[in-house]
Length: 256
Ligand SMILES: Nc1ncnc2c1ncn2[C@@H]1O[C@H](COP(=O)(O)OP(=O)(O)OP(=O)(O)O)[C@@H](O)[C@H]1O
Ligand SMILES: [Mg+2]
Image (cartoon, rainbow, N blue to C red):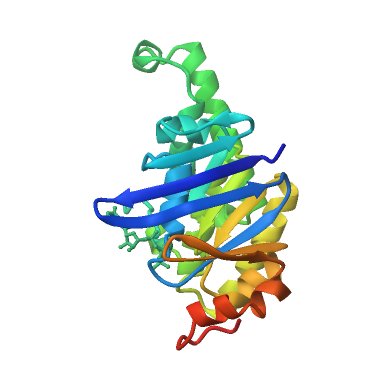
């Protein structure tokens, strides 16, 4: 059974059909690309998987369980992590606190424990502290622990965001344009980082990208959509030569 199975997914925003009959069978360990022109419905598909929107129609089955109707924090705790198209980091938080804060779903102590700093509360906070430093070390961010995330170079901010998405120990990671706005060097570093993360944390990855270099290099399979509908599904080579994909991107400078 696939790790993520999407069937007949359709979503309307008022009178606008953003996603139409989308389907996908994502096998464990796969890295699959989702491409399509601006406004094609890519981010909406991520938001539907994560429970930000409830689909007008369709099923989203993750690890054997239908996610439709579950709130976002429950979906996160089931093993789905994500990063956002537009960076969402807290302006005043240090890198350390950004990652520590992301552990909220792992805490199970109550207000009483927090107020009276009980042993149970202390123990959990110590574990979170330890785990945060471990993650910072793995990702080479230790030296930036006390810097404000916002003050870091853009590439590192994106890295912090990815680490934050891993805190909940996801099985599936959704990356929404992870290299947008990056320099070429940052782009290549991010591609290496994604490969490394995938191996180290046994991830299955669904990735949205406009940069074909990233998609073609990272993905085993690519799904192309336009106006919310699938127009092609295949290997990088099949997608590169698919007339409907070329047509959807016509007039745009895309190295398909
Ligand atoms: N919350 C919303 N309310 C109404 N319409 C929306 C909403 N979110 C997205 N849309 C519309 O749905 C369509 C799909 O948008 P979406 O953001 O999913 O596209 P995308 O493929 O991610 O595009 P891009 O590559 O520009 O990020 C667009 O026409 C967009 O304007
Ligand atoms: Mg988008």
